[in-house]
Length: 433
Image 1 (cartoon, rainbow, N blue to C red):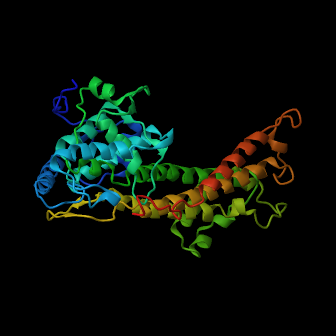
Image 2: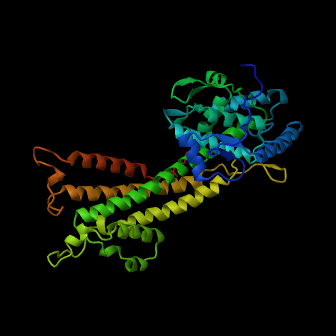
């Protein structure tokens, strides 16, 4: 098995599984990424992608035979870009690149993030703009389908150089080196996992090591997954806000459509509409719509719920646009252009993705903070409109939800800590490169 030179693949089925994600037929969707990352949907490379891979690879092979140095093909990398590498050392160059860059540290990254990272790198390979061989792309597809997940560590990506270390750990596994997790979660060597599934370890040729590690796929994978989760959470925030307004005998008058039309923020309008819909014909609300109810206005955590959840929705929309642009991108350096040039560029810089990830961390923390304030109001006998202290069945004997609020407060504090922007920090690396 160790001497295999081609990836083993099963015979093609007569009909493609409807859950299969086709890579290289166009930009991946959010649904595609989530299906593969979280639910192990199978992937297949589109025929058009295989043709592009073959065409661009021929360009790289022509450059490899050129006596003139070409970055990434016949030179070193980063600060060593001017060092010419003889032809008989280039395979070793690619192996050494991956091995040296697989230097991550810290806890393991979640399986779904690593799978998203591998899928997104495969999608870039499938554009034909990186110059890798079709069999290298097939190896990534085979690993995803076999449930082989490289061990990637939390620390090692600087962002400004893309996700070098995380991607290098994936490339290392494709070479049959380093540890991986198999489908049942067991930790095994990459060599044994590939052998078990009949997948040949890839032997990297010119440009391929660089193409496998030069991208923002980890950041983008986390962005797509975060947006997917936050879409659900902003709606959940609307539900809990409506329940809180009812439970605390608040008013829904402040959610009137004409009031929110005075400030035409689209996310705010959507959240207010959700609150109106959920409180429509509320018996609890009607029960205190009397002359005895003298409240003029509610606390911000109730009254301003659409403004905060709405701002989060608009931020999500912006982040989604950035993610969609990135899903349609081919990030590598150097890159094979559509007209056959091989050009150096700076598209590996993670700034566009980093900014919106920081932005999402801010709105997630603020949304959670407002939700925690509603919880605290429910538990405080001085502010909860007649409910028992801490919502306890037998206050004093029972602590009720006292410590649940402690836990919520601790989580909010952690969210606030994580909301400190990472994108503004930079430490020079690679000999000031």
